[in-house]
Length: 170
Image (cartoon, rainbow, N blue to C red; front, side):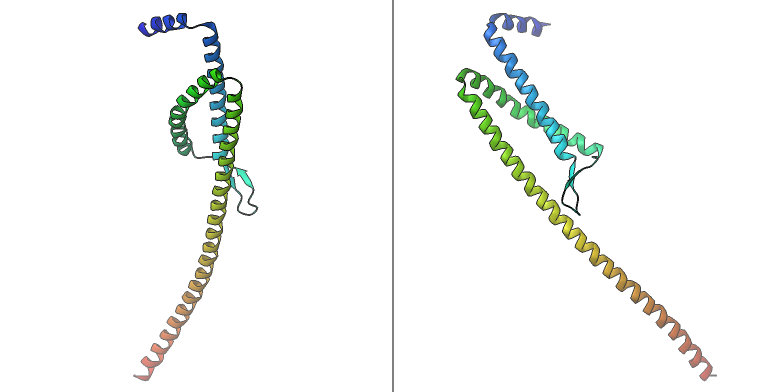
């Protein structure tokens, strides 16, 4: 209850302009966080089709999603405070700060796209290695089958020779 009364006192001391700025900043921050969460979920649910290299949507395991969300929430808390501070400072600065924010977001987007492209390349390289290893395993299995057949044939020949030797020694 004490928090509510002190909060009410603080609210009463703020001007209407400050409240409007805080509400707009809070709304912007919430919208940005929702967009980040939606994009993160979408990116995490995409995988590359090894045949075409196209991105496909795949279901995620439950445990992986929760770990990612927990990590994402803590990262958003860490970065969210600095964003709030930036929004307050930018609202005081005037119109140029919005352009700076757009430029910052464009740079961040370029970085994210570059990182996504790099990760997709790594994924494709790993898929190629997996395919090569599968082919090698198939060849080794064929060799193993041939060796097992030869071994069985040698066992039969050995039995036949033992019978012949047994008959000759009688």
